[in-house]
Length: 356
Ligand code: PMP
Image (tube, rainbow, N blue to C red; front, side, top):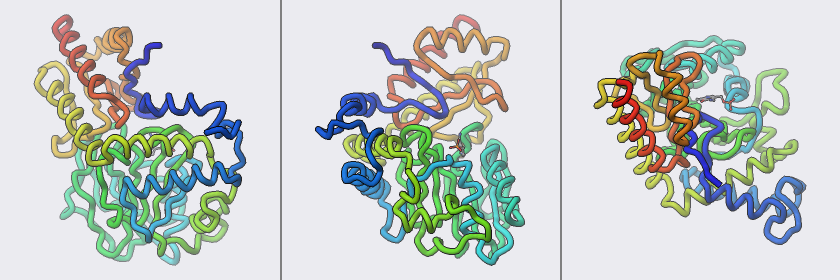
């Protein structure tokens, strides 16, 4: 068996130990004679998996007791609607920071339900706290801590005063410690740093859970999901289980402090290779460069196809940039080993020598 270094933005690489454990437990989960996929979500076996998974996430992220953790479906994209449906209440407007494609998607969806005030805008950078035009009467302030496509990451947590802060942390969750108490709601699709696609994790401050806008579907209500322990309907059981294996892997590997140290080292290695090359380049403000998604272009885009073909031959996969920006993108989530980044950097240097 030979596994490749997969730089996909998501669904992305999973830790090999996690996949091996899932394989070992696939047909018979711990002597039950059942696969987790075959278990009733209300049976004691799955209930124990669900509870342990939540407890482990609470432990590694140090989530305060005053927050609910929901294990939902619908992807981060559903949260673009669920946030306004659950948080607007009697308010008519919400603040959004626009730093790229995913912010824009959240803004467009938010605009279906309320007046959107764009409190700050930047591309390949982020607006400074002092430049944010915040409305103290807003229902919430929404932002995207890490823009997956352009590789722009906030170096700070915005301060919205008493207005609840909402963050789409799909592509940066679990990459480093985060002070959850600063947020009203944080949400993430699982397919990058948590596990497999189909699971969405929502962490929401209890006092924000309550009435929804009229005609909100039950499946879009935080209250209904919270009151039912994320089992109002059949939850994504296998994704929930797989997330549990990843959380356990993080715990056994030193927690988020260790993840952060390794992630910083991987990102610095890659950015140094890009910046020092005179051949590759990255357009992002150096203060806001993502640790997780590193886009870069070659000096001549004519070489892109050759680069991708040769990289794949060396086991370096899915380096093509997002269709909206072109070039390359290396996504280097927790499960990407440092050797994967070292192999990419060595390949890039060799490629430049031959074609640069
Ligand atoms: N937000 C961000 C920051 C993302 O990177 C993505 C997916 N790439 C999404 C939202 C959409 O997530 P989903 O596909 O889970 O709806």
